[in-house]
Amino acid sequence: MTESAIKVTTLPEAGAVRGAARRGISKKRRAHFIVKSLVRWLSGQTDTTQERNTKNVLVFGQGKSKNLLASTEGQIEMSIFSKRLREARKISKMSQERLGIEAGIDPASASARMNQYENDKHEPNINIVRQIADVLNLPTAYFYALEDDTARLLMLFHRLSEEKRLSLLNHVESVAGQN
Image: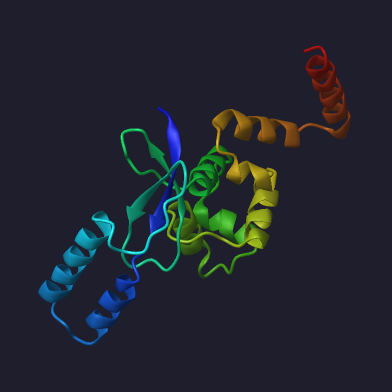
């Protein structure tokens, strides 16, 4: 299954829909507004930027764009960060709560925050990612590797001793020099 980038676009009207909910406008009227906005967006009447090799997907109620993966069939998957985080945590056999606490997140919210990161509701800042990487004994780059092979190589290389890293680098450089 081939993966391609998707840019999730938030309509400016989404904020108005949330505001309408606070002002007591009926669900039926808000739904009508959403459908109308969706039709305008699909027909290209909204201001969205088309990027090369990027598909646009509409998401209401989110304040920023997210980088997601999509199969060629158009099925949306979680972000690469969320996918890698979940895989690494499960391999290490840690609970979300324990990982969050060991990464320095407040114990009262550790489980909920890790759950939000894994379910692509929020993305942690780089300092939290570094702390999570340290707890899981992974390089920070692992969480952003697009290909599974690259992620696996990063993980394995990170876990080698310094001596074995240098030996492996020398070997790879000699093999690459032969081409």
